[in-house]
Image 1: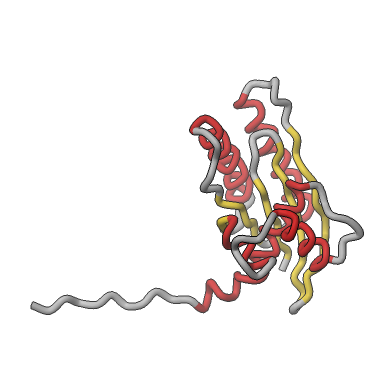
Image 2: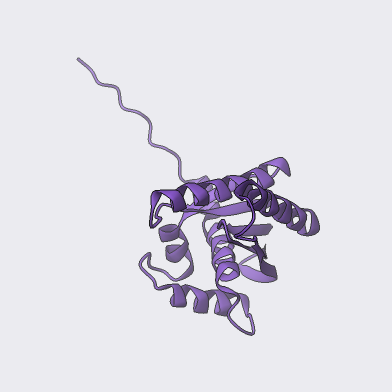
Length: 170
């Protein structure tokens, strides 16, 4: 299975592509899409969408996993980040791919083993798990972590079924 992870951002959007071969994770590519912060915001969103669409076309992943951001320093930042996430999700959906979302807590748990891991710990584990010669650029490393999270938890999602609803008898 080929998995594309995305760490969305309005200035820098990281991406990482890995393959899961049995229990082995193989690094395919990673990088970042940089937008011109002086450009108009709709143009920046277009750059994110087009950049991710090109990467999807190049590597033909089976699935896209996106970090679900729940924290921002201010409302304006949160809105811009949400719109960047939307551009990333639409790139995957328009390519006909399933899109899965993971919180930072879930990503850290899946990669390091505990949800309160420091960013540096996550980067070191990504490097180790994928056998990279060095730590990837920060946003690309985060995207690889999201892809690893999906690789490690995709099977678990299928095993978990909601409990049947209980009827209230009167």
